[in-house]
Amino acid sequence: MNALTLINPADGSVIGEQPIHTAAQVAELAERARRAQPAWAAQSLETRLQVLGRFRQSVQDELEVLARILTCETGKPLAHSRNELNAFLGRVDFLRAHAPAAAAGSQVWDADGMREQIERIPLGVIGNVSAWNYPWFVGGNVFVPALLMGNAVIYKPSEFATLTGQAMARLLHGSGVPADVFVPVYGDGSTGAALTDQDLDGIFFTGSLATGQRIAQAAGPRMMKMQLELGGKDPSYVCPDADPVVAAQSLADGAMYNAGQSCCSVERIYVHEAIYGRFIEALVETTRSFKLGDPMQEDTYLGPLTRSAQIGVLEAQVTDALSRGARLLTGGARVPGPFAGRGNWFGATVIDRADHSMALMREESFGPLVGIEKVSDDAQALERMNDTRYGLTAGVYTPDEARARAILSRVRAGSVYWNCCDRVSPRLPWSGWGDSGLGLTLSVEGISTFTRPKGWHLRSV
Image (cartoon, rainbow, N blue to C red; front, side):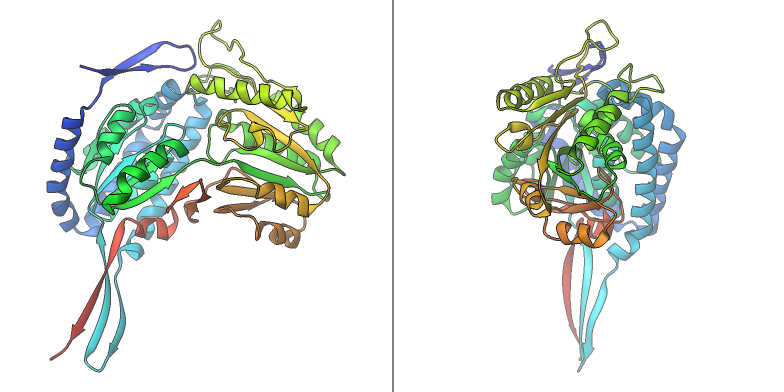
């Protein structure tokens, strides 16, 4: 039987094995979910709210254990794992609080004996191919509202977050979600492809552009609902009136948190020439202050990369930039890490004198690497920010809100930030433009996306 070998990215040790679901097994599980979904949808919303409330409590009760599992398999520093889980609890609270409004129908017309009503019904069976960098966030953005709205969910965790996926399934089932309503399937890309091939009512994916494109090609002709949360090449602009030290400290964290392994990590920074030197100095100083070390230690800020293959991507981007005239200010290479050279360690890297001829300003880095380019005015910064196939987030640093709004209103991005970055709120829709994807999660709209509207025309006789 084929199995995943689960590796701790910090030291390269084997932490487990997981049998891979075959295509035939995935098909059988999908059929079971199809049969089970109507009974789950027939439960009252209040019942489903109570079940997900028990799930939330179980996550809170086991938070420390779950954080250690997450750190062990992804390399995320333990403090960051706790942050993710604590914030996940807040997301569940928001989704439960606003589920009734998202599920509620409405009467839109009543005159001359004719009533018109809108009913919200579940999509049906949802396939969710999830991600490893924030598995509680990314997975929960889908399966929590999907289950609340009465759907069945077939959940494929990333192969790099398998143990966390197992924990999610255990806690959901223990809280009262039937085993055939939340169905985990484990494996690699072939398992995800097998899931996409099933008779689904929606496919929700978070990951790379290349995989998202393959899913779109496979699922598009079958007219199912499709949501693709893909990559980003997220820019920020530091205006001449900004405090360069404050902006640098914020942006260093936005670039390096979780080792830069986030679709909304800051990957390119444009700095006005008037404060460029002071900003660079502060950014490098802050970046060098981040402690790289054992992710299980409380004071570690920078852990390993989860995927060893990403080191080659970062090395290639650094080499390309330097060959085109960029300057390496810190980092730029593999580092031994705290385990005698074992594990996937890469130093926090800052490169300036960057421009858009370089891959690090055009292609997603997904690691602790940021490029900086000097600009002469707001117009040039705006042109650079929009010079991308992606459109996930963008930010502006300035004390002048009107100035920030004037720039950000013209940036092609799903989320924009004034004097902040790398931030997601359950109250706001999370969406992207261009190659950053299709559809949205979070906000009340992100709950409603797991329903379909049904129009009723009712004439009295």
